[in-house]
Image (cartoon, rainbow, N blue to C red):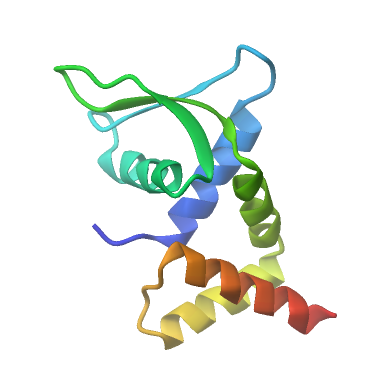
Length: 115
């Protein structure tokens, strides 16, 4: 499956919005929506989201606890619709796919262009 920058952005925002208190959590499972699960999984593995692995014989599951500091920073960079649109144009120019770390660099350059 290819990484979709919009799904990454959506996943980070879902965690930030869904974690409203000390016992709040977001549950993610590969049995309900694999594309959503895949993007959460990639963000967890890249250390943008903190989660417990609750996988069992019935499938892979995460109990998402919060964004890491890197996750908060990445989401802040993604919030500006202007910067986001420019970043997606650059991604398209690069063939439509970039690693998450490159996505971050493109977002940084978009913010730098506003200053």
